[in-house]
Image (cartoon, rainbow, N blue to C red):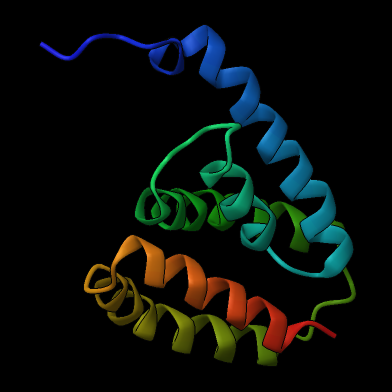
Length: 122
């Protein structure tokens, strides 16, 4: 049987997860993004210590809800035609991207995300 560590304790884990969600929600909405770029580095850090692949999957699940909340905060400032086209095409290709990331090693996935973040930074 696997020995339980302090990281497996929900009372230890949940406050950190709430901190990550709060930080990502605030910074993500300020930057006009869902927060995944904030969540993933925090989840893979010493804060939660989850794998790069788990962080990507967890982030995508969380961003779905934080993105909706952020968009509601921008009420009246959303270009619905563009948002609809982006959402539909994103939903059509998200599964492909998720499948492709499972083929990458954790190290290459982490490095690729870092390079991508640098390339798209304003």
